[in-house]
Length: 308
Length: 256
Image 1 (spheres, rainbow over the protein chains, first blue to last red):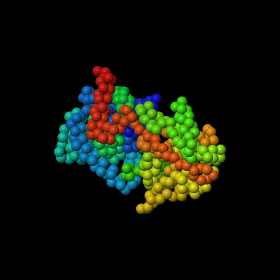
Image 2: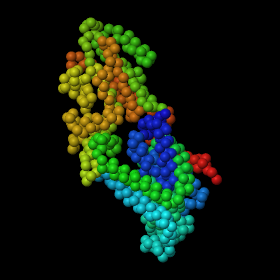
Image 3: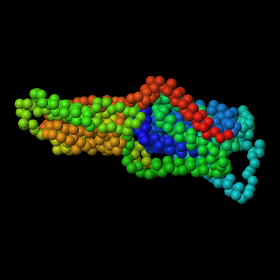
Image 4: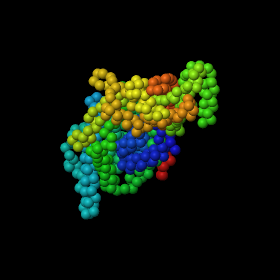
């Protein structure tokens, strides 16, 4: 059964879209990531124009992250205080990212910059996560105790001024690194067209030492706010939000996210981190392979947006 | 099909009237409506070459080339090359005001219909359609063998938006023909121009133009209109809709 997408202007099989939504929703609920870094390339593969794909995925991410956030809020796992401080940096970063995006597009090669950023970022973070979680699993297998974080053992950047206490996360750190992390996520998110959850979760876990589940829950809430803002921004600036495409994706996505967040909670934190690390690494390798292999057709045709 | 047959009869009846040789054309429908179940459509073009009554028995065999052009749009064709181990876009050409849809149908390969100069002048045949490229500060079409031009046509054909069929025009009687114009699901909306040219002994004999509309209707139109004319309202409504779906899903799946 096919359905015609009014903004993307093409017919797509509705079951393919639903399945895509459920699969990506499951992953996003499980790891607290938006799933944009998986969903956007898949939609482009189905023939949806990239601008419409990026904008419409944000509706799906808003719906599934809202549904997930509610579940975590009810279980008291979201650190709202931490989310608000992160958001202050995040929204500024988004603006910076959008401006950089425009400058890069003027000089061409935006696609290349995005691909290289993907490879570098996903490769590094994926490798770090896999190595760290394997080490943790190995330690446990040997029956050793994990190193307990002592108050004096904080790295220097967490001991900067403007210290704040985030009760839910059990941390007492300077606000400067928190805002800086929010800024970086917002900047990279806008530049790469992703929600940034898969960057935020490891940043919270490894840099701020926030417990894994709280990190996942807080990242989900941040994704919710940025995606809700992104929907309106895309609709007003680019008119590329396809509500029909978004609706089908979000129906699948919210169902998937429910099962995903349950699966995530029933798993051990180390396993969850290992899986997310492997997933991030796999996407990074995929982008690298795509860039390095000879394309079937050396030529590609795009619509000239500047002439519109 | 019954409507098409009735149309054909009307055309044949019309052709009985006394007048000089002329070309009469009709489309099975003038408007393609895009609804939520739209996956593509086809339009049947009927044409009658009405013979000159004074020399009715001496109608020479005609050749027909049908060209359908969708609304113009500007495109960029990129060429990739290997640099530092990565395949990146190194070169590009802008195609200005190229048809977003192009179908060229004829009763036999255009090279057999007329000489190259005539075909180029009449833009008859798939390779003879003018495609303006931006070259420096100038705009011009380039030779047919230009790799960017060939790549552009190849990519568009692969997308199903450019169609070439050298046996796409059927003569069902000596001077009555029929052509099926395929319109894919991804066809851009707008007004399409259908140009029919008939050739006798390698020279242009008749030229006829019709137009065809591809438009969104009902729900599809409402969504597209809202997105275009009320972007704030549309954006906020979509956002609230997304939150509502998330909320409902959360309630439905709530276990505790």
